Image (cartoon, rainbow, N blue to C red; front, side):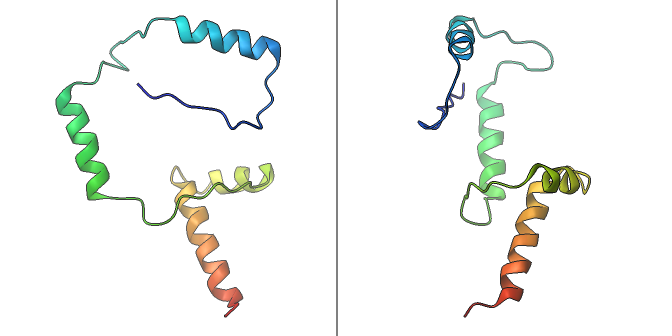
Amino acid sequence: MVTFELDKTAALTKEEKKVLAKAKELPITYDEDSPEMTDDMEKAFVAARKAKPYPGELLTLYVSPSTIEKVKHMGADYIAILGKLLDKAVSEYNVM
């Protein structure tokens, strides 16, 4: 199971906090679309991650909604496309 912690600056409403607290108490439900992970499945995920590690430093970047909409139309790997575009822009800017 993955646990995600919100940034401490995130502001949740009282209703959102109640919904999250209630969700935390619910049991995990597996089905054919989301089966329980076996040891073999976990090993396969680890092997895949090692075979293709993330090619750079992880960065949180805020992008305008209009830019996200445009780049999403470029394909499912739009995040990789944004990374390549940023690399190209920085290379062409040539600060050094």
